[in-house]
Length: 118
Image 1 (cartoon, rainbow, N blue to C red):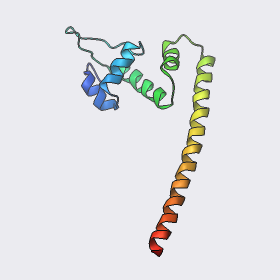
Image 2 (cartoon, rainbow, N blue to C red):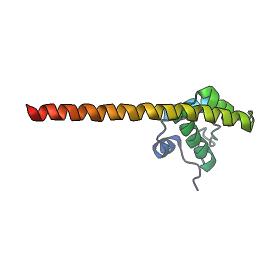
Image 3 (cartoon, one colour):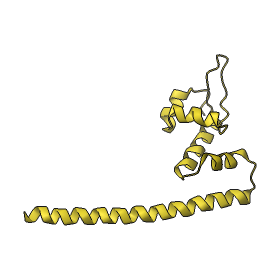
Image 4 (cartoon, helix red, strand yellow):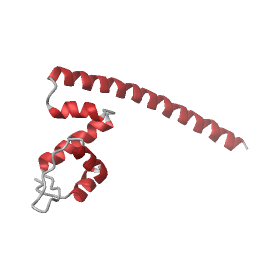
C-alpha cells in the first residue's frame, strides 16, 4: 500500500513524466491531493488512476475520450463503443507492424546475401 509519495517518485515508478502528470491534473483527469505545504501527494488510488490513463493513451485515446471514460458521465455501452473503436484501430496497427517487421526481415536477408557474395 502506497501512501503519500511525491510526483518525482510516481514518475519513476510509472514511467510517466512529471510534465504529463501535471498536464493530466490540469485537464481534470486526475485529482491529486496536496499536503499542508501544497505539494502533490499520491496514494494507491491516484496511482491506479494514473496507470489507467497511461494505458488509455497508449491505446491511442484522445484526451477528450479519456475524459469521457474517467468522468463516469458516459454509460457502459458508450464506454464499450469507445473501447471497441480503439481495439479495432490497435488491431489494424498490429497488422501494419507485423507487415513492416516481415519487410525488414526480408531486406536484412537480401542485404546479408549480397554482402556475403561480395
